[in-house]
Image 1 (cartoon, rainbow, N blue to C red):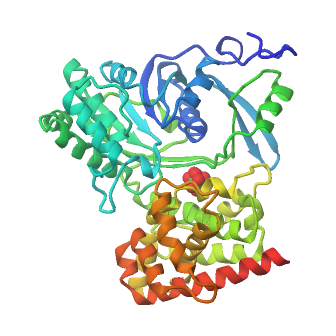
Image 2: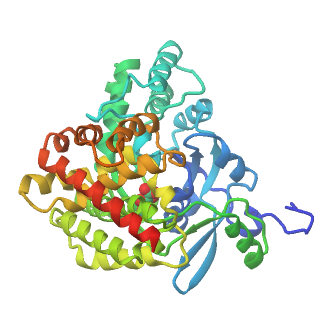
Image 3: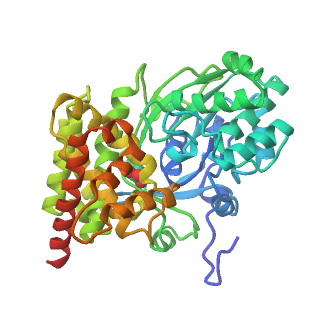
Length: 475
Ligand code: CS2
């Protein structure tokens, strides 16, 4: 197949990759992260030839269109300080739009499917602040109605209800046990996912709960690999270096980590032989990763954008921002039960990687869903202990400033709500409205909002971060 008039051949499975493996894993939410992470681990497992992934996109069909057109293979560019390495990943066997519930149902009824994995983001769980399924969400409500009326309903929009559709089909087909292994960036993702799916089941057909109790095993995992969005430069580089056209290569860092806890009654790839850690308790690793890596990422995303930087590498090179990151790590590190010294050094090196252009704007998206899992838990602990709270208040203050300054470029699933809450905080040129600030904090966490000490510190930090950003932009 020719990609263009200059006759660059398109990447293909036969030429550049492996034969299609039989589908045994359903993945919900295929994006660049999964392609650099779970698909990499599956590719590098010794039994890769037996474990193919049926990929479903999270939202629109874009990624399935791109990958289907090139037989689901793509180039992974691993960018370290020393340069780039290229490899073809063949572990995705088929691609589908997330809304293709018929294709999803067909996979669930297949007894060979042993695992469902997900990277649907915090927002994809459709949770309320209490972690329950948000049945007032219009998409959730519409999906529940549709599936209740017709167990073969197509075009479902929300992940918890899509899972119910899959389980209904699997029960009907008596296709046997299955493991659900979420790979989303939130602590206790197995229990969190289970809760919303079981609540959706209770709404649609409570009798299915007896089946899921016997047939579904809920695993938990911590995932890590910094993976920016694909750029035109990545596509050009692959053409130049490898001599094939790939419309959707993925650039990632050399570092990767996957810690998994759970049972796999229908088996799993030998991911551990590719470096994944199988353990009984993921919690300390999840907290270390979420609070330290993702918490400092969010701090850099908001503060760094206000300072006028575009990438993580640029932001972390700024002495003030680097100090703020270290202060946040001091706060979070107190509450993490696994070692953090080496981890901190490694994080700095990863953030500084000059060959990864990780855009702050990409990380800044969906702060309303990210801050509650990245900043709030350690902030609450510090407040309770009387420990320093400034670094946590600073992250939230920077988010508030960011919401007011970048509302035109902001991507957030709760955008209109959070922007309207943030705007009154800085309604007057001269002063910050403490009550309005309390309301924004309450959106993230009621406990923090009920502490005047914390609210006052966020007010102070809005002022300090704002002034520091102004000074930096003026310099
Ligand atoms: C980032 C993460 O975009 C973000 O919010 O913090 O995607 C981060 O790069 C990954 O969790 C790294 O594993």
